Image (cartoon, rainbow, N blue to C red; front, side, top):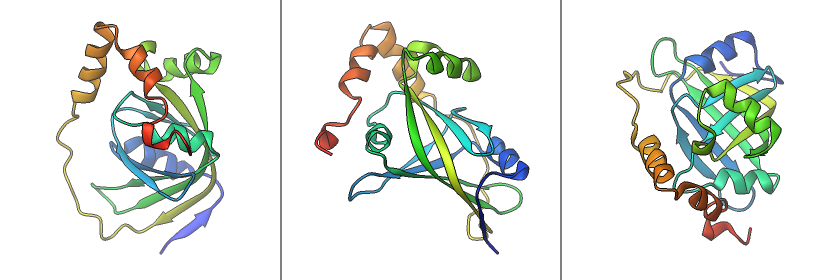
Length: 176
C-alpha cells in the first residue's frame, strides 16, 4: 500500500499543487507542533525542496523549530478524487525579510513584502506515500480571509512590523 523514497516524483508535485490544505508538523524539543495551513502559500522548488510563505499570526513555532535544527513533516491528503496521503520529511531553513532570497520568493507568490513574516525552505530527505482510504471526501467551499484581513489592517495601522518582531519567537518558547 505505502512506499517511501528520497525525493518527489512528478505525480507527487502535481498532487501537492492541487491541494488547498496541508499540515505542518515540527519539533525541536519535547513537544510536537501541528498546524493546518491554507492559502496559496506553498511552492515546489524542485524534487527535493518545498517553499512555504508564512503570514504573521498568533504563533510562530515553525520559526523556533527551524532555528533549533528541528524536524518537520508536511502532510498533504486528498479530500476529493482518488485517496492519497503524502508525507514529506524535512529540515528547514528560515528566509527572513530583507534577505535577497526573501525578495526572490515574494515574486513567486505575488504578495506584498510587508504582509509576509518569512519563508521556509523545506529540504526533503524522505517522501512517504500511502493510501489515505480513511480520509473523508469533502468539498472545498472557500478561503477564510480573516487572517489576511487582520494582517492588512495591522499594516495600515503601522503595527504589523512591531508585531512581527515581537512575536518572532512565541513567549512560551523563548528558552528552548
